[in-house]
Image (tube, rainbow, N blue to C red; front, top):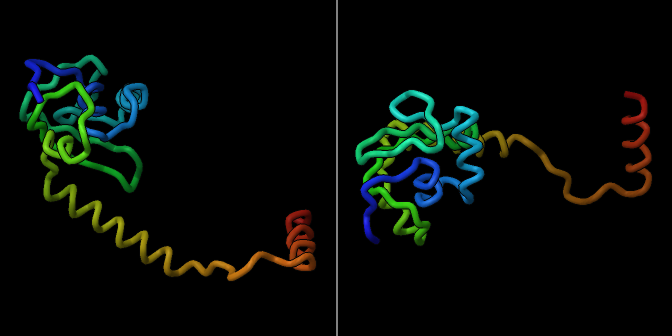
Length: 130
């Protein structure tokens, strides 16, 4: 990989595999889900090595990363993982959220089989009443 002297943040997010397409990255930036040094930015903002980026993809996927390599092309996943360094706090927060989700899934009981004809009628009647 040849390192570029400059790199747009939307292109870097795709190259680092945080987003699948550049359009998704641009949308996240415009909606304020991507912060560079704690401030909102535009998709054309040029990144520098050492910049701190906060990425909020969803409530369970929040990353705080430091840019190590500037690249605009999307390489293999193993290579893309070397473009950034995730903070220890970010990793701990994601692990904690994953454990909470796993506990929540354990509390939910799912049916072993689909409802039969009689049970479907009862469910339909319940839905109509509400």
